[in-house]
Image 1 (spheres, rainbow, N blue to C red):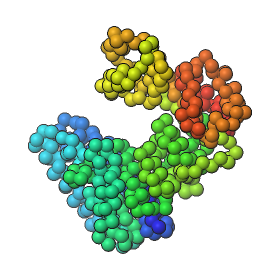
Image 2: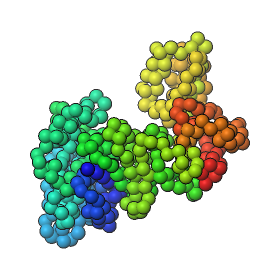
Image 3: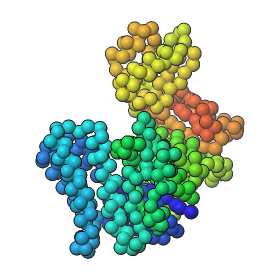
Image 4: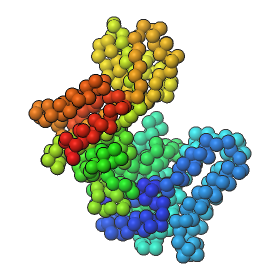
Length: 443
């Protein structure tokens, strides 16, 4: 059976790391599909170009930086053998597109998507040249040939993509190692569309679903999911096992190791996702569909948090119907605020936002008859574990810790999932509360 391996941009940013990638792909049982992010820093350069005032100078500087980064990843022998020429050819394509934006003095949405896709194209073309030194049964497959996106929600269309994938020429199916650029696909009209940042995780997971792969491995240059942020809890450990749903929650609370969308194809195909460290092959987190209730003999797996948030507390004594909630949501959307969570009772609505609602809109809400209270500098904690609320004695131990912080706790939410508890607290005590929970139940 196939296995799929995704390599992040920081796994490709030095010749030493590229050698590690080659070694990994050489040692793994075949066939393998390898999905690549752009080399670290390249997508940022392309985004900066798209957001800059277009000029010949900006074009030249952007192309020069991209060329230098990739050139440093080729040995002198490979350069002498002419293997860097394929990068030069791709850069010429990019140069023509950038010059086109200068002529029309505009970067529309379609052109921006094409420009941003070049980071992954370049890294995968680069890795093809490196791998051709060690194996001849390696092929490069561009997403344009089989990864079809639904234009309305930027999610891959399984029916359309699988039909195209199954109809690919035999040379791709016979590859020992198949290389695919991540981060983008095309619509049914063959218009290039890029995904959200870190979207290569989703690309790799969807490809694993198409291939009915046995595993998906996400390679990073850092350890897997941790029991807490090691910068605030030095005793934090690697989490060996996570359920799909636990992973989604942790990803939403600052654990940027896996894009949440990558879970969806894994659940559909029922294959595990391994998060592995390219610098420490023994370190890994396995994400799968079963709960391991004996995980290291403790139930709490991880304590994570988001800080510097805003709590918007709205009261309306005759209750919140659908139209009122929709009006408030539209107002928040227009301000481009991110809703991390919201909670509703009959006469009360709480929003946890990334920043404060403007004074103008607070006044507008009050004019509509809402009582509005805003609290800034709020932290939102997420405690993940195995059936946390089923064991009453264990849950009582947990609440004992909270008593020491009761003056600073704004809200506790239990029951959304059996595996999670959420706590809203003032920023100033968040770190100490996390350390207390970790010390009691994990360390």
